[in-house]
Image 1 (cartoon, rainbow, N blue to C red):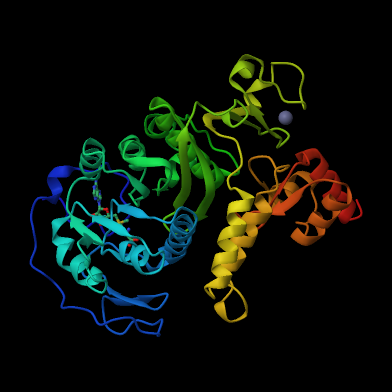
Image 2 (image 1 turned 120 degrees about the horizontal axis):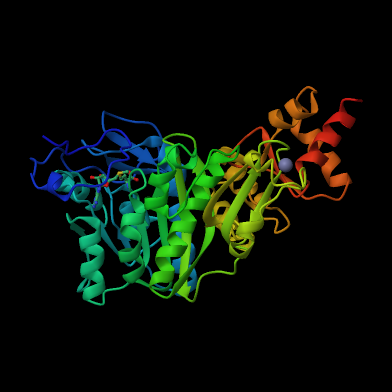
Length: 429
Ligand SMILES: C[S@@+](CC[C@H](N)C(=O)[O-])C[C@H]1O[C@@H](n2cnc3c(N)ncnc32)[C@H](O)[C@@H]1O
Ligand SMILES: [Zn+2]
């Protein structure tokens, strides 16, 4: 029999038939918010001071930062537009729905999970928020396959401001077109992939069918995971005459998990410089973006002849543009500060992440990152310290930042050859 409750991040596509058997209620009503951040009993959790139960649902404590980012962005939307209707298409125990209601001040949340056995837990968690505000419902719980609920909403012209797709593996591409159809213009989609095999270039034909991108192994695989997710969304949106742009992109090693917040508007495919191909040279370590009309002329500056073309690997099409909007990250940081989520007493995790995303938003920085171990191995030196090499790069006029994705790596507009020269200079070679 198929499992009703996936406990691991499964890359296999969703099977609607696996969600037909309802289970008995599993928990009693939870009490209201508490201040503690520790677990009080099995399956009872607090996150940002909000108490909830997880029951037998799929829940990962490690995804709290991803939920924080979602809640901040939904709150910013509410503040700027004065309204917020959220569709949480794969809500699990309903924690995001609850947080969108309580923290982002959503006017309405549709909390959906195909697994009907989660119903009791979701209802009990959401019961902390009055269901009715006058005549209007604040929240509703449904148990449909995500594409069905999204398509139903579209058919009823019931459009949402914010759609959260917290799916497994590379399934997100399966839901994106329906999500864009049921999203308001200028609305946001928060999309997830946990497909680390595709980003690693280990199954290029799978990534081709899921994201429309043929991916080869490259040193910045985890950034490629974000870029194929965005690229896939760009492609799906363009079919409907929409254009999407990423407001932030977040990689986390547990899972691994790739999350992107996209804003959707009417429009065409982005300019060729933002949606195209990426080429990496195994010989010299250099990377370059390749546009569609340059496909037949790919060469690396390290070799002018075509005979050494075997050293080149090409991935794409994927998103080659900025991973974040710097201005948007700044707004998130300000709100997080206002809420006491960053700053002295708040712990460093979220602050460090947002500040690093801000650094990565420098428009001079190209795609990818350079691992310092690769620089050291090519320079035949010890690995330079990240702060030393960054300050040398800045002194020479290059843009350079850390990467939120890889700790011992830098993003820079300096080619690999320049990094090698600088590493040698640092070590007096
Ligand atoms: C990663 S979990 C959700 C976790 C939750 N969003 C959180 O932050 O704790 C994914 C959920 O999606 C549900 N699911 C899987 N495939 C689905 C589909 N096609 N339609 C709707 N729900 C689905 C599963 O039952 C599971 O509860
Ligand atoms: Zn080369």
